Length: 173
Image 1 (cartoon, rainbow, N blue to C red):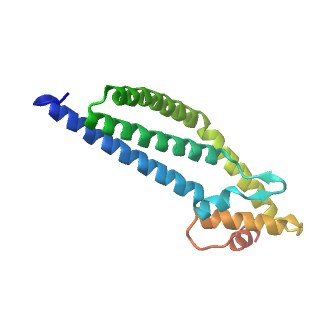
Image 2 (cartoon, rainbow, N blue to C red):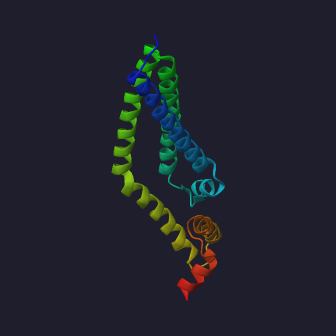
Image 3 (cartoon, helix red, strand yellow):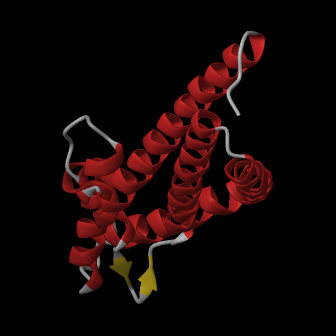
């Protein structure tokens, strides 16, 4: 069934906004994949110190972003193609996925809000335990691994060029 007049304008507006939605999904998916596979971020999260693994809560957030970006791209495609083809089935599927996506985004926002303190506390505690071992003057065997952990943290988070050994020397003096 061909549309005319104002309905034709609505058809192309629906296509345009779904195309923007599809592009936004692609950007979210790209950023999430970049965060997951970036060497500096991966180096920070695969650290082990005294048998403790770095907190993996960040990876959970990245995986949620990957899923949301992929679903947004699927929903945007269904909306674009359904609008151009004027298919009620595709537009119905588009609406169903849009409701599911909205529910997932609300759930992810609630999860992130509820765990914001936990994520930062886990990283701070991991860093603090490595820092305490790094400034230990007794020369324990785990001191070198602690300095390596701090080195990864400092090169990832800080950009002032100071090495952890310089920081440890300044604190212990």
